[in-house]
Amino acid sequence: MANEIQYKYHPDNLVLSEPNKYKVGDLKSTEMVLNLGPQHPSTHGVLRLEVLTEGEIVKEIVPHLGYLHRCFEKHAESLPYNQVIPFVDRMDYLAAMNSEHGFAMGVEIMLLLDE
Image 1 (tube, rainbow, N blue to C red):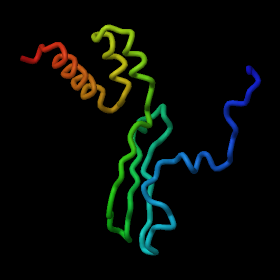
Image 2: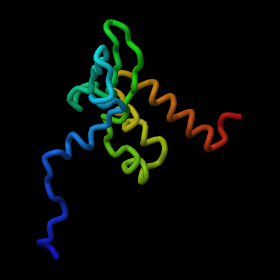
Image 3: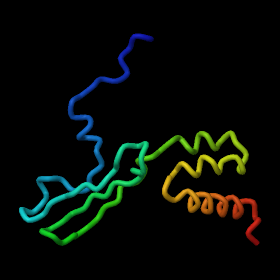
Image 4: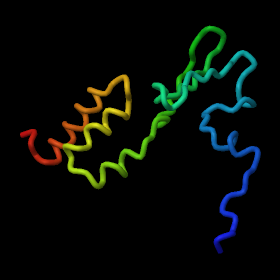
């Protein structure tokens, strides 16, 4: 059982797993899809935008979230609520205080401290 292959590489896996709303074959000849982000995970690439354009006009933007997942939920399971705040900071480097505020508000509501 230890030598059993659990995963078999297939060359199309990356393309098949990439989340896209628009497929190239479904676009009109005047439309184009631009991907804005994400960058390398160690930078601020927490978001990818799938932008549908027609010429110079932006027709639709589809946000793809979750590119900076750091197993936050698993870390937080074994910690008291006040020790989770340093992990919340790392969810979005550019908006650390916003994440702290949202987390603290959620904890206060669950502990009925907001009344």
